[in-house]
Image 1 (cartoon, rainbow, N blue to C red):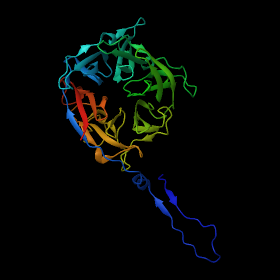
Image 2 (image 1 turned 30 degrees about the horizontal axis):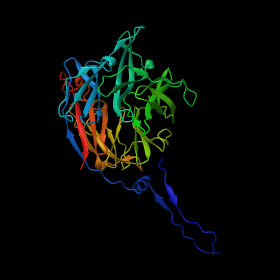
Image 3 (image 1 turned 90 degrees about the vertical axis):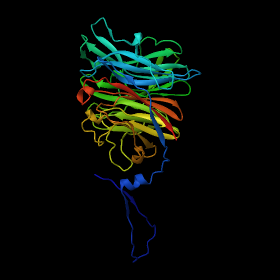
Image 4 (image 1 turned 30 degrees about the vertical axis):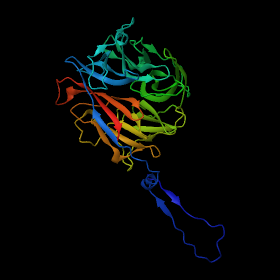
Length: 410
């Protein structure tokens, strides 16, 4: 049911026999949104950089880039070696390096410490959904993600998932796979099961502490995710849990998952995937969030992003969302996961301003739902995305590519 707000006037004293005329003004929700403070548009410049080719046997999925600043800067893109014939056939982590601002990339090399391995109980464990990012306070790259666990090397068991991390120090190789220890129960008393940080965009505080979005299930028999933010300390070697904030959940489908976080003009913003739509929430401290809102355009219509992740770009005084959505002549793409869009967000209304929407990566018979953001500076960010599921479209049999786009401002 549509709700309205009523504006009216009252008088304490009304003379006897007086005729009173009352005016009632009805504001529609659209009018109220229009009355929100306007947001200055930030004009973006987009430039495609060099790509990284997959192979005849493997696709590169979950590709994301980290920037190492310095007198000789470099960019490291990590990728999951992924089978072409079935979903979640994840194997080793590879990396490719650019020394020329993304114009060219080195041949992909396996990361020995992040290879799929066999456990004593027969399970095979592959680190995946990796997000590497520069940690300025310790001058290291910290990558976070989740483990994929395969019984007898074949059947995936999501209940064994864990939050993993790995560290690369300057001029060194990646360190060992490590795991974040979490409480056994959440604030509501439910068990924390299958917690992971797959595909989540973290935010680093100036003191070096980390706000890490994670998700978990509360019932091993019901795959419905709750998302929260874990405050962690990090000394350049070990990531330690300190506390976590609001536990966000919906009962529908798989709940709320693949959360991503950013900060902008004194507030924190969280975007959340759901099976049927996507949500956003705001916080003043990065831990405790207001009620979630469904993502919409500023005209009140649904954004149309569903069952895939969204991420944030903050650049030149603007807050932007990276997403895929319905309604872009893309019904032939699985879950409408292409093209990849970017749109500026009004932080007051928490809505995407429709007239700012741009295509980051055009649709080309492949999904583009698993992207990553690499923040270079206040005026530059890169978007990295590996093409997916070519086997479902007209490019079946082709090798996929990892695509990189540089965003700057005019």
